[in-house]
Amino acid sequence: MLTGVKIAVIGGDARQLEIVRKLTEQHALLSLIGFEQLDHAFTGATKEKIEGVDFSKMDAIILPVKGTNLDGQVDTIFSNEEVFLTEELLQKTPAHCIVYSGITNSYLDSIISKTNRSLVQLFNRDDVAILNSIPTVEGTIMMAIQHTDTTIHGSKLIVLGLGRVGMSVARTFHALGAKVKVAANQSDHIARIIEMGLIPVQLEDLEKTVGDIDICINTIPHLVVTSNVIEKMPLHTLIIDLASKPGGTDFPYAEKRGVKALLAPSLPGIVAPKTAGNILADVLSQLLQEGLQKGKEQSK
Ligand code: NAP
Figure: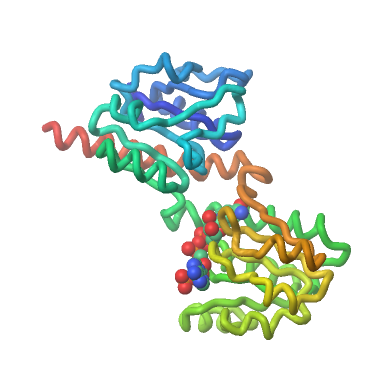
């Protein structure tokens, strides 16, 4: 139980509602900032304007998956108002206040460091990233179906990267009957690709292996689908770039050549916000309870 724990939930999309539901069920006291257009009400959660919130009492701040932008603005799907997380505001929180976000950026890192607060990046955790790869793959399948006129079964596909998302993508498209190549750098990844019954490609040889590809799915947050690679692809190739913004594709060159390339961020929030929200809610509830326990032990 999180009885009496005070948490500011700032902005976010439908995923955040699952977090609010779960934390209020555990009797946490929530200030919802950037939710004034939300019709639903939760017992224990109050919709507030950021200026009206007493941050000196906050035990935790929960940001959306993206955290803030580089100016400190937080996305607020359920509000027309602009909401910013500032250094001044963080400074008002008690020293034990922890900020939870999906990912971070230089702005968020900087205000966290200047105010000496702690930041937990939920997507750095393997459990969250692996579970989140499930709705990500389902969204990728949706995009592949929407943007091709052939079946996935029998199509020639290349997945770039064998991290937590790449592995789930490669395995699922293989199970759907696609002929799957996977490009990676590390020898253990190449070994795993062979073990999975897929075709291994050294990333440096990418240009040589895309000549017959129908779908290219990138998970590497680094420019790997370069103009040289795109030049060797058939014109009908569909590139789905899952890597975080700005992706790993030379989009201007793809457009110039007439190859369809789509940057596809936040698929879990689009195709399965409830599942994606529950993944975050479960881990947040566990982390907040652990924090509470630690605080109690320290005060003994
Ligand atoms: P991950 O486990 O860290 O995997 C990243 C992969 O990229 C690894 O295979 C890594 O190889 C490779 N890589 C990273 N930098 C590289 C470089 N400079 N050159 C070559 N290879 C490189 O990450 P993940 O959890 O799978 O997530 C992958 C991306 O998808 C991230 O950008 C994440 O934000 C994004 N994502 C998007 C969605 C969506 O809805 N679109 C959903 C979830 C995640 P090494 O291990 O050898 O470095």
